[in-house]
Amino acid sequence: MAGIADVARAAGVSKATASRALTGSGYVSEPTKARVQEAAAKLGYVASTAAVSLATGKTKNVGVVMPYVNRWFFAEVLDGIQDALLRHGYDLTLYDARPGTEGRVRVFDEFLARKRFDGLIAVGLEPSDNELDRLIAIGRPLVSVVGVSGTTSVIALDDVNAARRATEHLLDLGHTNIAFVGGGVEGGAHVDGIRLEGYEATMADAGLPACHVPSPASLPGGYAASVDLLGDVRRRPTGIVATCDEVAIGAIIAARRLGLPVPSSLSVVGIDNHEYAEMFSLTTLEQSPREQGVHAAELLLQRFRDPDAPVVEMRLQATLIVRNSTAPPAGIPSAAAGVATTRSVP
Image (cartoon, rainbow, N blue to C red; front, side, top):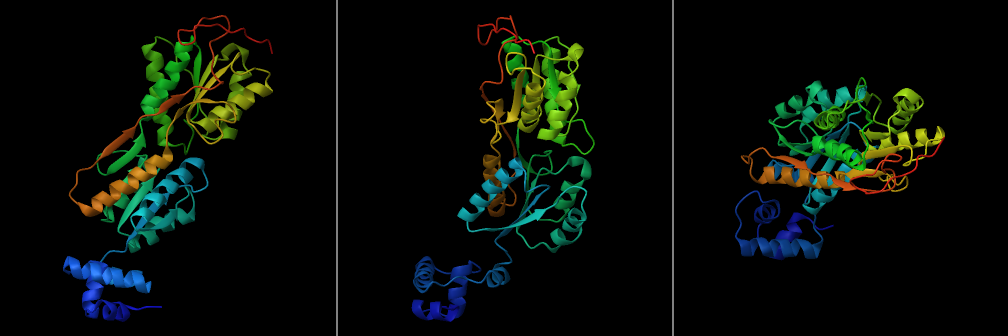
């Protein structure tokens, strides 16, 4: 394997000059730098990460902190981050900080304190935990995916708008008895509360009462909450806005098991466009977590180039995707569809 001495000899320069040309740690004329880089490429020389770090003070590594790595949203964000970083020659170190675990404590108390990265991307950290403040205190550039803005740049879905559009879709179809399922449980995500606010504001604007049914933001959670809600004839809604697609899919399964056809007896709309949404023909507000990951990585790299760049708040707009889980209530014409459906008797 070729070493720095071989590259220097092939380029006709000293080892120090070759090192500066390859690490960017000092001035080298452009013609000389090009000659050294060409020699390194021909010899297959790859600079040692440790050597580059010693010469430049940079690790060419980005730390990514997230609470889950096996959930759809987080996996998609991570994929986008990794793709962007690899294109710019950066490594990635993943810190799996699962809530309520000893591992999470060690991530914040030990591993992050070692600062083996040039910057951090925090994904889905809850503001109530003060963990974002702890990351800021480390003193490295930081970008947050899903979070509060003000102290650091943030990339996130406009959750209030997404919930508003989901609710307005059902209102336009003619529904007036609409429930929001999800969130409001201990340990729940901050984003669920924001989406609930968007739903409640839209119902208030329409002069209609809101109905919130708490549940974990998961398929089993949505199923259990919806079985209880739909099993009570007196409070059964004709439409459900779910805090996420997994809750929405749980609601669809619950309705089917109770003998309530979707959408003729119950309309359901989610938020995400989860990979299972098409399978259940779910109407949803599409967000792009992979795009959020790409934006976060590129914003962090920009911060490396310009440490004094202003804080950026990027709120992405969701896109309504209409499938077959929503329709007008039985016998009611819809402004959106202009047709009426016949409710099936369970």
